[in-house]
Image (cartoon, rainbow, N blue to C red; front, side, top):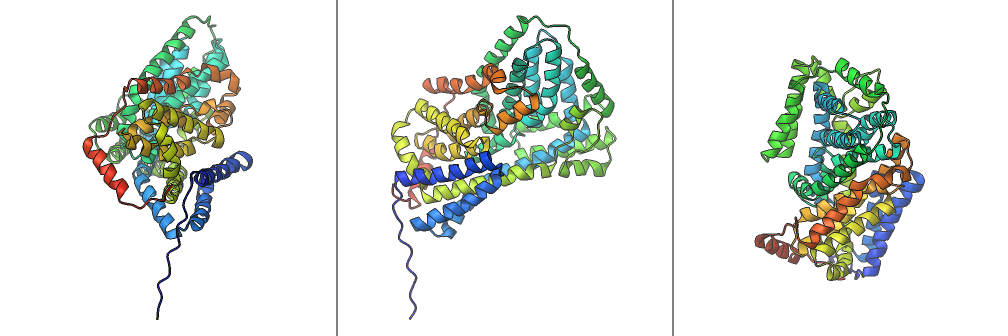
Length: 483
């Protein structure tokens, strides 16, 4: 006679124990990064084991937790494919001279009176076109620091324009890893996420630009030595064939994206056209062009700034962040399966019912996570995982949440002195936190604009009746752990 094994009895997950589980996970990640310099990817993967232990205690099998992890990972695979495609795109565009053309045009428009405003715009453009704040700060940003010093500008103010522009572009660029991750975690189409951010970031951008214009016009700039700028322009001209043709791949991608073409198809099309331009116009070897798409562009330049800017890209450059997205989403799926997210949401949902309270809660949770873990990626993951269901429950579309998570998780991270973004910026530009932070007006303004918009229900898109009904039906299907 065979007996059917009894299913383990589920224990009730209380609010206190849910907070304890989340605290343990955050503590492991924060301590591992801050005290031992461990990789965030491996810390998140190790937390799968921690979740499995808590799951065993609560009566969950590992198969159930694994299924929850895979469900969340599946939702993020589109973003992972986009990021890998972006890596190929960057490699192809550098080979074709597309990136060089954009940087060259930006550097040519610098004048002393408009230096601060131009620095802000140029770093924004560079970061949008390349999808990397670090690459922008370490290349164009360094050149602008030298030019600003020669013109007599305070290094802290110049650094603020560089950092603000670099992270603005990182937040807005469809090529950025954080933009793709925020869209994936909140289950929002990439272009919908980007368009929704434009509406609130535009006022903050205009106000910041106006302040920098005012500061520039009231600054007694010296004659300065523009040799750094001129040398960089000369080296770009010497190493890349410039003109209109290298800009065509970029025009194609933006045209396809505006036509709402599938982002992966648009990006791959831009990559292929980049290879065609690289081979047919720039005279790059076909094998070298395809290698640049896979492993990144590689060439030796005499100018170290040009080396940092151009020697990158490729699918392989995105493998690390792709692993981060996969492990992070898997961890989020396990926490959701355990009921941690829903249990913590319960008391929050009783107070966060208005648009203002939802946005304020998202900002507080996002910034608190950055303070605790020093990681923008973990902030985007946890804030989106916790708050998106609450936005939907109150009838608001998930892009409202994804927008606010990037206001904090991407844009405001340089305001946390021990965050990786702040440490990189300080180390690369050679300035202290208090030197640049007071002048990063954009970082302060963007969350404030989101809060003001929420008070008047501006740019707070709502779910349709059909979507609300689908959400209610979906919530009623799975059995939830009682709170």
